Amino acid sequence: MTAGDERTAIRVGGESGYDVVVGRGVLAELGDALGGSVKKVLVVHPATLGARAAALREALSDRFEVLLAEVPDAEAGKRVEVAAFCWQVLGQADFTRSDAIVGFGGGAITDLAGFVAATWLRGVRVVQVPTTVLGMVDAAVGGKTGINTNEGKNLVGVFHPPAAVLCDLDLLDTLPKNEILAGFAEIVKAGFIRYPEILDIVEADPEVATDPATPEFRRVVELAIQMKADVVSEDLTEQGLREILNYGHTLGHAVEHAERYQWRHGAAVAVGMMFAAELGRLSGRLSDEVADRHRRVLDLLSLPTSYPAGRWNTLLATMQRDKKSRAGQLRFIVLDDLAKPTVMLAPDQSLLFAAYQEIGS
Ligand SMILES: NC(=O)c1ccc[n+]([C@@H]2O[C@H](COP(=O)([O-])OP(=O)(O)OC[C@H]3O[C@@H](n4cnc5c(N)ncnc54)[C@H](O)[C@@H]3O)[C@@H](O)[C@H]2O)c1
Ligand SMILES: O=C(O)C(=O)C[C@@H](O)[C@H](O)[C@H](O)COP(=O)(O)O
Ligand SMILES: [Zn+2]
Image (cartoon, rainbow, N blue to C red; front, side, top):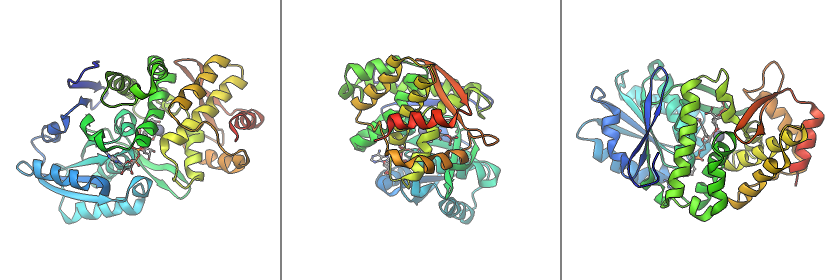
């Protein structure tokens, strides 16, 4: 790993291995990443990135026939109607199995584009070009694709690894600060479950850590990607180890659903990690010191650490529908210590409620 400006390639192993490339200007590698046998390319993007998507089409046009699909922003794009719109575009353009899709946007877009690629003709090539911090460190890596339903978050999806992930840090120049901070929730997650060095860097100076121009930013981004790459290399389809990536997500997804997706995913995960830390503390697994560190680090990043106390019943009902719940039993990732995540199966209702009271506002 590097802290400088050069290109880094982080390998994801498994049956169909691929590189996650990080650096400035790496978008120029897209043509090669798509590959020589591809003829047509569909770039899925939100309106915010319309001008950049048009420039991308121009840059690729000497090698490929490039189509653009502008889709609704953020969670509004992760709907079956939007996937159907993309399928229609692919059908009308006679896309074959040797053509490819590019997800060009934040995590919502890469989830949608990956899902469309996984389902079109039972699976075509996808190259992910994440344009948010969250997309780079988490969503675009690992092949988990999906859309939401009225009942909950990511309830429909397929594991479909990308052919490559290009994280061009130049794309972050236009990303608003609150989006950078939301992405840091997943980076902090990587800090708690695998690389405490991330927490040290954020605590040392959160301004420096969250500034895409600094080596500290590059370091935490690469550590988070490395963590995810290692985990999904070992367990693509979440038979075991991969579950740790859900730290903070059981409650986090329920918060997103309760807020009708008006909260950033990262903000909801921040609250979810606070809840998981309290579950760990109250069950006697986690020290006060590590539990308290959650609040300190998330506060430094201006991420939320509490949620209105009266919403428990709604959140509980949504958590029961989460895909981590099995045979009616809730599952949470909790910590025994820093970098020691484990599964807590079917915790007592009174423990859950007590943990929720601790984060209630
Ligand atoms: N598949 C996975 O493993 C995985 C992992 C983590 C999160 N996710 C999913 O990712 C989604 C959240 O991703 P997100 O936080 O990137 O949100 P997002 O995709 O909604 O993007 C956030 C906002 O940033 C804007 N934007 C994107 N790139 C920009 C740029 N370069 N400049 C200016 N604006 C830009 C978008 O238009 C959008 O309004 C959630 O749906 C979550 O479930 C998936
Ligand atoms: O890649 C994973 O696995 C994760 O759990 C990463 C999470 O950050 C991400 O939000 C993921 O989409 C959640 O997965 P889900 O299966 O709980 O929907
Ligand atoms: Zn997440």
